[in-house]
Image 1 (cartoon, helix red, strand yellow):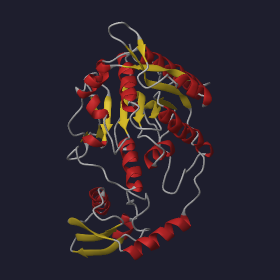
Image 2 (tube, rainbow, N blue to C red; image 1 turned 90 degrees about the horizontal axis):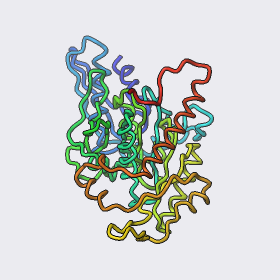
Image 3 (cartoon, rainbow, N blue to C red; image 1 turned 90 degrees about the vertical axis):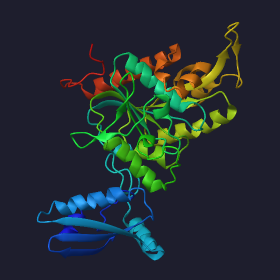
Image 4 (cartoon, helix red, strand yellow; image 1 turned 30 degrees about the horizontal axis):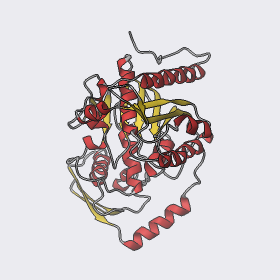
Length: 378
């Protein structure tokens, strides 16, 4: 009976039953006291406590159990090789989201629940201000009265919590979900830095763990009713962006670039990744396009001639606008007060997001009673 109960426990890395993965090594039952030994696939796995808790809860549901103890060990190199061969033989090819169903072995698209529109912010290269664009868009949407959430999916370089001025530990709510922290204006925020005991420690995790954590940061969080959830992705085309594209029901993608030739070249990779994953791209925004001289109002091209419009045209994307280099951005970000920043370009991008969301909602609800609206309550 204990073994059958453990069959419902999934490995947080692989997403498969720990029984099917041969991770359960020993079960001892003595007068209602149950001891289980589980072999982890990774030594010092950061999600080991989660796995232990899941196993304990599964056994306790059997009833007549006085105590449950879950010990862990680590698989040998040979056992890991055997497991790898088993997973490869049972894996199914990755399918396009257009075809529905699973998008890879152990990866399923998650639902949206009470979230109206989910927008990912991507870039090919780091340092172009993607997190700033994410927080600025969230702040502008919130100023207009929308319920907004921000998911920081950049696990190795999380900065959303800092620039939005939130700190502390999220807690579990009455429904069992994690309650995200709120900014001063009411934006809901979830970031890995809010969960770590020491935010200054690096996150050194293998790809499967990164995938699992991103899914948990989205699905295990009680976002409530949101008009918009903005997802700040790490730069590049690694496991983390791929997980978001495969797992989350994205309604659109905003691409961020800068005037540098190198940034323009690498952002094309991120755009092509989004296209391959059938994610609708709302358009491209160029950050740090120019500097407006505070004394004479002359336009200074610090990083060369703006290339955003030309780049967007070459990639067959709408050009959403160029954001000027503004010294106040660094100051407000350091102080956790980015919500105070506003610009006409950011406002224009928000207008485009609203237009696209309205069109998608109209398509989804044609002939059906509208249960919710993209417009905020007045």
